[in-house]
Length: 310
Ligand code: GLN
Image (tube, rainbow, N blue to C red; front, side, top):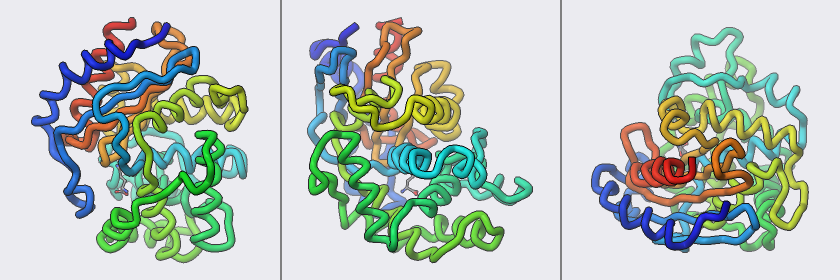
């Protein structure tokens, strides 16, 4: 099935009013400047065509959506046995930046790669000589996924700096994990890579393409197998159980698609063949967030889209 432009325009019109119920993230000072009424959606259809509506061209930072990309990259590079020896695969039911379960899990290991502790452990695994090399290799991986040139994969230096200067909680998670032998290396270097990875810029179409690749078992619309079938399945599974943080259960009931959100207001979702939505990728941007840090109007759009394509 193909979603139409008109269907997306209706969704934007119906859901934009929900943006007033949310708030933009402010704990990263630069993100507080986002315009809360923005709302955009793009879909990469089963036949590879793109449709979009609303603020679909606006560029925004990936934030936690970057966690599925770094996970894909380390899975492809080192294999699942190594990756899951350092980070678990169980949902926490806690906020994305919580430290609580990290202390309770023995031996110490972040419970999954979508919470900050787990994502920081994944970032610490990125291959490369130094921070710049690691970031460049990650940018190249994204360029390969999106079938674009490396220089088109940019990060927002202001957002990265703003997070780098304020992210004491992420530093605390890293020091705690290094003390317990979960990660190695220089904490400031990992924070440097992580804050830049989170600040990589995209738009709804870029997210829709990522969703499309994952829903098509790792293949781009032009047929390149950029992520193995097995790894694409692992990532979809982890998106389903952990992708929307401590709202993942509710999101699974109300939407039922593998999804991953970021505090910039990004959501990427993958179609599923048991809905009328096989091989489809969805990208959303709506910076007004609910209390759990997920785009409030973006989540509503996905609920309505799924209700209309059961
Ligand atoms: N960069 C953000 C952080 O580490 C990402 C969190 C998110 O998008 N939920 O806090």
